[in-house]
Image (cartoon, rainbow, N blue to C red; front, side, top):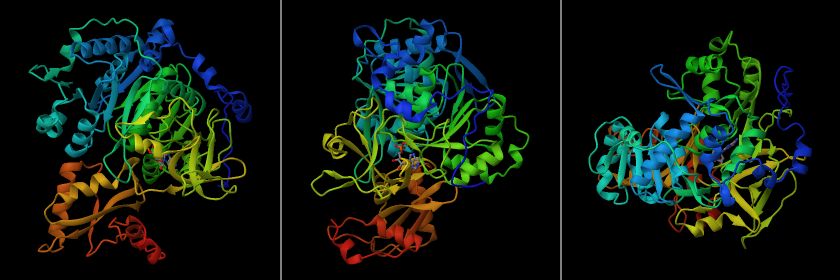
Length: 583
Ligand code: 6R9
């Protein structure tokens, strides 16, 4: 099969794609029209959770399945839209009883359990801000995010509480209430989630949020400083729903599976909001990746639309064709991928093994929703992220020293930029307006990704223009990792890089120089990796650690991770005289 083009696979027995004619859709689209398709609230109000669940109850579809939960131990539980509406009402009422006011932050630290989804929806109904924390984070990333969000409420499990939060309570004065999903005991500051909800009415007046009220807080990493808290508002739901329709081809009644964890943006925008606002049934698998389990879910649940990530695709490829043999995937209409570059091999492999290609999509925490995609109605250029959605203007730009931007010739590399004005654009970095402003040049939001655009308008990912890395689809910043290692008495300096990895895309690798009196060796290496793992958690901690006498630095003392990367890859180190002069 030629790798330069994968023809679209449209079966006659499947419904026609929502986005049939790309050029026409771009020409006629307006965000106002997309907005008009939502139910909305009196007096111009808008609420993500109302659009996700209550509107379906109001139009008589309350009995259809909103959430199908598959537990680790083989449990299976369906929640109808009406049930989710009632449970999220009870949660919102509980928040009010706990004194939570609109704008207060409610965090969740949990695996993919039903309570997480109830928390997300109930928080939004109460007008509070939902902030998910990845359950595989260690105590340090949890502390930083709870502290910086000034969370008032945390929903978690007893085990995660004991391991990661309990000891932090004295340094988290804002955290008034912790709700445990699996406990019956109430003590000051610690509540039993279910008992609390059971004591509340499952009715509520309509939410009173306005479109620009804060709704979601997602922490994301940059090269320097603490993680940035990207704020999204209720208006974002316009983009969640629209992109779910156009890029993922979602429709009411679909069985839809998004494999992303809600600890990250994909697991919220497309693991909760997009499917529910499109009236689909959301499949949630509590278990971790497992080849046979995943194929069984696709087949047995008769998944129609599947949204996953390149790391998982590479793991499926590694398992070979045998586990996929004989699978009945006739229900599967559309497969898409996000989060890391999707290798052309993965697209071709999927056609050969699963009978249809993966469609790459590109977006970020800051964009809130898919911006660039390969569409069901279009042939695929494997390796390309696709073309901008109707309503999205993307361009390749080069920053000028004065802060403005240039538009290079077609095909030339530059930074991927998006014209401001789409509904799910982040509205702030929490408490960091200067950093927010740095992301913009005039009308353009600068993404920090390097890319090219070909003559037909397809975008091709090149890399990032900072030192943040993606490992198994998770965005990791060097600051958090290096900072923790610097707390160890033996460590003088640390530099983190992403080391290419066949499956995870990249793994976290650190270079460490030691303080006088410490000698490199295997025991110390293991100790340092263990030290980092205990504090950061397995998802963030370095997998490899190399001792080095001196870390390359600029004259102003900044560690040059670029040189560490070049050294790791055996690449030429470039013109050191200019690099040394960087500040
Ligand atoms: C949704 C999400 C964003 C960064 C982004 C880019 C990388 C995302 C990609 C991709 C190549 C794709 N990225 N999609 N790289 N091809 N299709 O992943 O958000 O965690 O904020 O990460 O991920 O570097 O800037 P987030």
